[in-house]
Length: 102
Image (cartoon, rainbow, N blue to C red; front, side, top):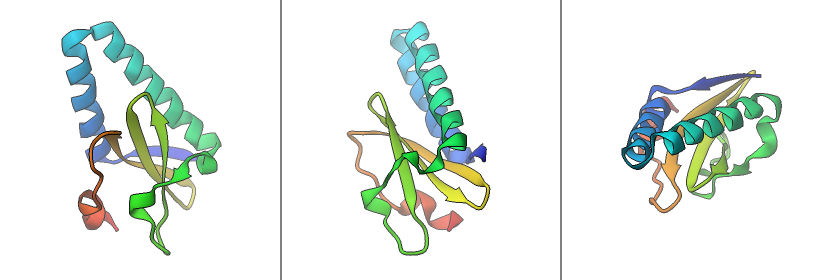
């Protein structure tokens, strides 16, 4: 399967990497590489993530994988894994960011 990132997910990831790089550019680079590796793996194993409890819907099921303290949230659409957002695990997750794309 092809892996695609939404603009929102890329913005979130960039903000996280920028924040981490303030303390450690090397750690930020390692984190970005780890996220990229996990995202590419989803192309081969799209069902490997758990269903996101906050976003259960009968017609649209979002899944997530955890990378360090972050949740990489995605959905499977035909032959594509669409990464929808990246959230810190301590932040409250709402459905608001996705309503425009459903």
